[in-house]
Amino acid sequence: MDLKTLKELSNKVEADLARKKREEEEEEKKEMFTDDDLLNASLDDLTAAVIPPGAVQNNPSGPTVEQPVQQAPPQPKKPDKSEIFFRELKEKTDEINEIIEMYLPEETGYQRTVLSAMNYSVKAGGKRIRPLLMKETYTLFGGKSKVIEPFMAAIEMIHTYSLVHDDLPAMDNDMLRRGKPTTHAKYGEAMAILTGDALLNLAFEIILRAFSKDRIDPEPIGTDKVIFALSILAEKAGIYGMIGGQVIDVEGEKSGIVSKKRMDTVYRLKTGALIEASMMIGATLGGAVDSDVSEIERIAGKIGLAFQIQDDILDVIGDSQVIGKETGQDARNNKMTYVSYEGMEKSAEDIKKLTDEAISGLNGFLYQNEFLNELVEYLVYRDK
Ligand code: IPE
Ligand code: IPE
Ligand code: MG
Ligand code: MG
Ligand code: MG
Image 1 (cartoon, rainbow, N blue to C red):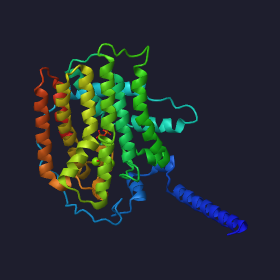
Image 2: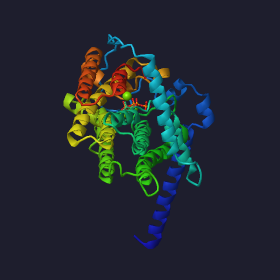
Image 3: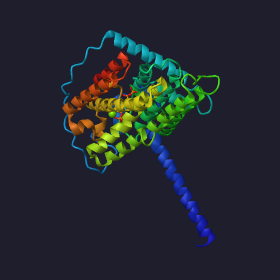
Image 4: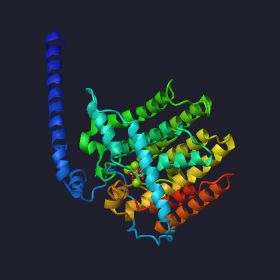
């Protein structure tokens, strides 16, 4: 081939690529929502825009899981939680929100879009279960200082990042989270990916900055404990923890059929791992001995599993307005869940059994934290 033909060929390839990019950008613009669209659209409009009625997402060719019509299970009788419990829960959640806000970034500089998206995702709300469990486990082991605070903010940043990525079109393709449009629906996909990345990184920045000189003094507990807590956080968020669980979960959707053993692994990792991290960090910084930290990991694993089973139940029978996310998404995503595998009744029974076991584990320690026991019980009967 002579030089002239080669040049013509290369110009043609470049022109083709540029045309393709323009077409893709046009397509993307059509699909993107403006803020006004989002404010004016109902959830149904948003959902219909991305999910054609009856479509099974992420699985255009794979077999479809038979999703039996689910009935509300005979719910175990709700224990009468006292007004004092709910008042305390509210006070503690408010305190956590204040701590988290202290660590959120200021929206300035050229990168402010991502900073605004980070604040949007975190401030949208959420139950703050992980920092709550962390703080209460810390208290159980006698912790009293501020060393726990940056860890509380960090676990919520990591959890929020996991939700932002979980909602992306390539994953669960959700348009509603914490009662608001998902991060990618509001800021676009690229910014949502970067928001998740940024929140994960910020979690570690928060902790490292907090213990740098002139700030929180790690001495009452010792630097070793802070480093151990950091390594728990890193590991439980990673490939042997939450990310690993998400990977197996997403791959399961392709076939729609997974073994019970594989499903248990998904649950233990995608949801259990961050709950284990929360309670293990609380125990570590509170001064628990190694064997107690291991016992807390075992207990937290049960809480995590029960928590995710209830999440699956709520996906089937919950009220979207109350839970702040779309319902029926697991079936639409062709997902084999604990509920589709075991049925509603057995799922509800298993939640109860796991919770009883977790509470009796907590009662096995020398000291007690009554609020923590009540919180664990409350998580089972939550309706959001
Ligand atoms: C949702 O977690 C994702 C799961 C792991 C089940 P939460 O139910 O804790 O969500 P927020 O933080 O309250 O929004
Ligand atoms: C999410 O599981 C677990 C993580 C985000 C790590 P789900 O996909 O069931 O959570 P929701 O229902 O979207 O909150
Ligand atoms: Mg998911
Ligand atoms: Mg999801
Ligand atoms: Mg779910």
